[in-house]
Image 1 (cartoon, one colour):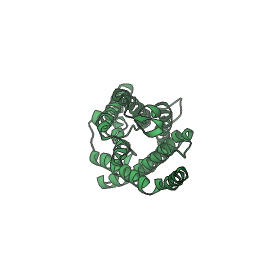
Image 2: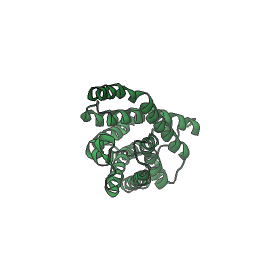
Image 3: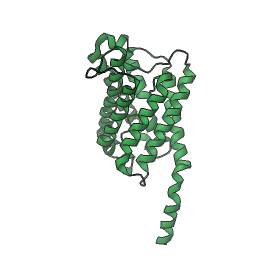
Length: 251
């Protein structure tokens, strides 16, 4: 077995890691879309009003918790863009990709169904279950571009803090979660800030709205794969001199 994100081991029980991805994606999508839905239909948390900052924090803080809870089990991808980026750079086995993608999508759909059951018809008709939709005046190409940009930085952070032994493991969850929150805040005014094809598709499927769906899938995948290649080709090279020096000492 080889080491994956956050100290996980690729090559372990496929059912175990798929269940972890399903549960993790379910909670991640549930946390963010439930808050977003409540904000749109005018509900509050503990008597306080909701805004876009609450949505970003819901996604970011839930990811912090999930990385620490499930990172050692499945690598806590919770995002097809992360899974495909790692596979494209040879750091994750392709044979695991279909199971991860299926688990992530099922988790997102189940989360959207839960939001529907919690908020009823108003949540589906008015808030579209927290689905990410292009803001007026933003084209599908615009959605693709902003989703690619923010996902680039999310995946760059993930592959940096979750794969490099020089980074303290205790900081990984915070770094990744805060980056996701920042990405949602940046892209939110334009695309809604999906930063994750599963997060985008889950509510879309249940709500029956597919505005620019292809851009919400392709954008994050392109940005994520590019980030993984950039880190592997350029930023990760800082490890090579130390490794070479150690090899010379052994020789």
